[in-house]
Image (cartoon, rainbow, N blue to C red; front, side, top):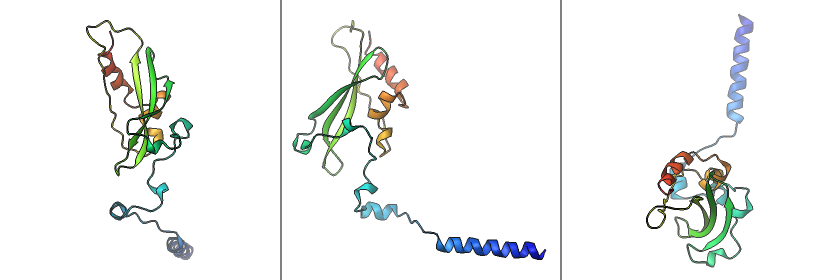
Length: 157
């Protein structure tokens, strides 16, 4: 019994010491909202690792909506997909580069009038660029690709 009691006291003391010496982390979301961190790495999106998403030097001087780059990507069989990198603005009216993907069915349009256009704006709630549709669509990991296929079915013959 004495050994068990001593062991409990030693373990409790070790735990108390670890707690006292451990670095503490404090989250203050309201304070961060009122006074944002001065370190941009604390709030900017994570880098994608794909150099195509890096805008050209001087892009900030371009008008919003200016296409900065294009590239073909594979998204769905039976379609031609093109990504556009364009000049946009963030919530504080600062210039940024943003990307979108245009998906066009390969089959010729046989309906009346011009081919319908479907704009699908996926809800995005992550600052991680690896989760952005411009990253997930070409990798085949987009969570809403089935919904996009249903929408684009109306734009196919």
